[in-house]
Length: 404
Image (cartoon, rainbow, N blue to C red):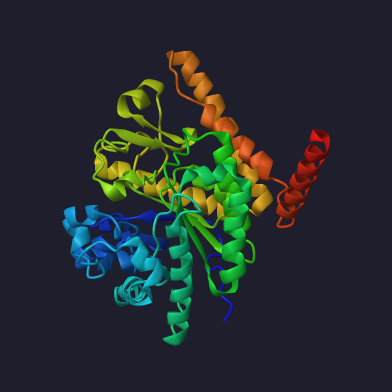
């Protein structure tokens, strides 16, 4: 059986918590994702959330299972899939009974039993493709596909690429990663989730942004879904280029930090009780700033003003995200890129206007980087990567000749 994309148009996939069922009540959302420990602890709100999702996804959170920290977090240690003691990397590398049946099959069964409409294959965080945990991830994908076939489970299945950000600047390794997944698993997977360590889409350098766009575009070859987790508005840029969707929570969760697997991080993330999403500028601002510039939102929750209270702020955020993806879904790839280039240009003009009239210093640099990424990717196709590699090889040969 040849597995392909299950989404026809770009999607924003909200990552919801136990107290957020009301935000999707009486709605039908293309897809919703929840963490496995939330699903385990709060069955009643999860049931309501699952009802609202056309596709319900459960992140198995297995990247936490080789660190000691999950034992200090009751919601993780109480997961039925959590080991009594952290898995040892060497055991997962060499002991098939632990890796294949406890880690892999145990977490697949958990997703199925709890109503997951897809399978997210268990995964670990790897710093790079040279990290032994990357090899374990490849083995777990192979294990999962074997077990799914053996048990005649035909649910869409996805590999998770949870990796360090340095690879985004190393095209040799980036292409090795893409080739490895395509060569070994392409016809057997519906797609890929991508979660990059410490990638902040408003602070990252342009080279890393282009690298992530490259990964998202070329990994999608052969009609595969590409879904970015813990991603801000740069997810829209990636969806215009070739990704399928992106996800964040309603109150933050736009940056993955691998340090959080080993210890509890304090003071990280944005306090969304004090900041409101202003889509027109692709950013967040406090109420004082929004009132100062006279910001008015036309979503159904703001009534021509700004959100009133934390819950309204979250409802406003979800509404704007879903409406933007509806706009993108009506356009083909070329028109999506043009549409977002225009939105970025409008945002920059608006910010320059506010900065001048109110003596502010709202940043626009990240928007200019995003536009450059769109321009760079406009003419990409699935043969251009091979052409780039040939050019690189020619340049290396020429350089070697000159050095003689």
